[in-house]
Length: 95
Image (cartoon, rainbow, N blue to C red):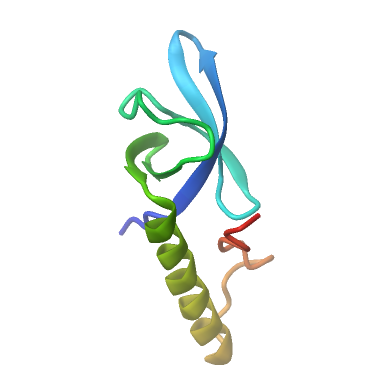
């Protein structure tokens, strides 16, 4: 099962001839290939699968996803379900 969590593009650069980006998932930043979304710009949200940005989301849809993630994380914590060593879910979407 895959989870598609939105991330915000904070940097665009080229690596080995590919358009790449640094994606901020609420405080956790990873890189992703942007070749499938050549029109994406810094500040826009995207969904990444297996290291490739596959679509662009508008900010409203991204924020709805963050809210749903926070609700799920709160429910898991209330049920005593561990979410990882440091609870690495998306944080403040406004960050």
